Length: 343
Image (cartoon, rainbow, N blue to C red):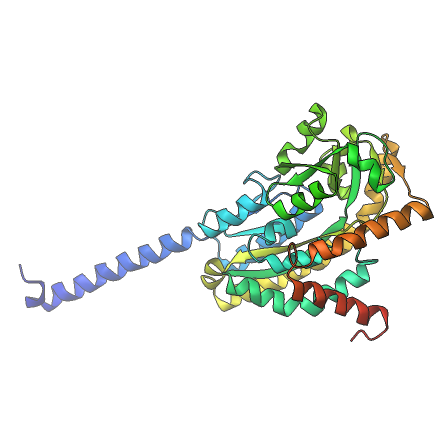
């Protein structure tokens, strides 16, 4: 039968084709979803902020959209989550520099230079100065940075008390498996790094595989690390800096209105995360102290030892863990801030 021989049949054909295309479109819309991974504990302030971002996205995207957050590292470590985003198993993640460096290594400059930053004001200033160029680098790699956050200062939680750099040489440190340069530097200085996934920290402490965990107080409280490593050295070793990133593919699939809603909600979440995380550092330490944590505070002489130790690491970090030009840029911004030339 020739469909084109009968105009009524032709119209009917177009009608049924339109129905089919509409059904296909609705099916695609129904499948629209964002899957977001992170190591953050379930129901933590970070998790709650991610859920708020999801509500804004769903409202803009439509009722058939689906937003899922996978907390507690259920999608693997941060390097694994970066891999999952690349192959489309995740559309986004809230990552620290450990995971972000798998996408763009220059981000290391904000976190891996020990005892460089003296205050959150310095961290904020340098991040904002470098923000546009950093976000452009991520975009060139196929990722959109939606929000910047942080999670407090890294402190050292250990099974036994330790206050000097040399005290830690007899101990075994948790390190992320994705940081071979850091492990090489530690070994050359007489320290013992043990590369593990974050999910392995607690059982590794309990079995004696590791004795020291660099961690923020909030994370040590939330994951109960302090119960097996009840000594905390009170130095601000480095800030934990992070970001909420989305694959460019997922971003480009959104309408301009949805993108605007998502960006506004994410920016608000970043502000909340930074403010609340910094406030909860002291709250977390106080809570752990009430449950048996011992806080070891270095005296002036011991602090000088730590400062000298950190500064000796800078030539080892520059050009390996942090690109030389990026390392120099961070120091230049800090110099401006400290000299009162901040703009």
